[in-house]
Length: 355
Image 1 (cartoon, rainbow, N blue to C red):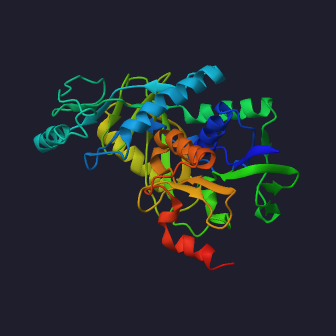
Image 2 (cartoon, rainbow, N blue to C red):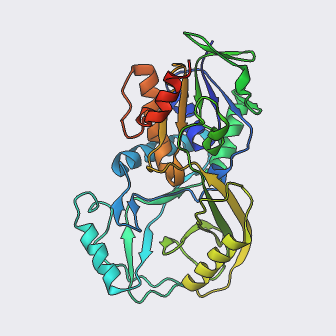
């Protein structure tokens, strides 16, 4: 009997798979490639919400775990994944500078916001009001991570490419069965695909479509991440990721001309050199209205678990949320109320009344 069946192989599924393997648990991963928000993500990690100058929830704890988690994966997969880069926030006025200094005085933000204005002259970006530097930032190459981790799972016979058929899942007191698989637990880490999952479909997952561009700009010569209304991430070879858009109505993975125009217009306002669009990506992020992940155990079936709702900060959240769920299952460690799906009262009551 296996310890875990894991459905989904995005950032959430990979994080749980890896933590289970590190703890000598046996797994099988099922994935159908229907969700691509992890694959096309910018991969940016940043401990500060720059629009509101507020700290990302549990930023310090997430960053501490992030560094070791992706570092271990780099060794295991023999690839470079984690690129630690300064993030410079462009200022457009003296008022913005003042807001930055006010925020940097806050105890929870002082470790993340440098109090030194950056007057560095960037090649094709003018900034008469200078930049503010956010510390402990960078990006994870999510597309390469997904590709290499799948290769690893396949090489170990731990991966099945198929669409999960919920009607074939049988639950018992001590285990679950799916087709010819039997496991102590099943983890659903399906991203926006969760809405088709009868065990969790009435949770308030509200997908947010995001689009980004891959551009080539030989004269940009950036070696830092720049953030204004958009972000620009240098990924080498004169290539840059530019994003991202937010659309709460469209739930498809199809790139749109409207988003492309929005991104290119914002890019032309920010940089004053030529660029070529190489790729245009789109995906639906699994977001939640209260901006907290959806983690926990089905109220009726104690062997069926969920790891979802990582939203726009999947790179930061995945290792810590997977660790929390693993410890909850294996060591009876309570989940924080902020992430526990039991905080959604109508979800719990729907299972209590649907016997």
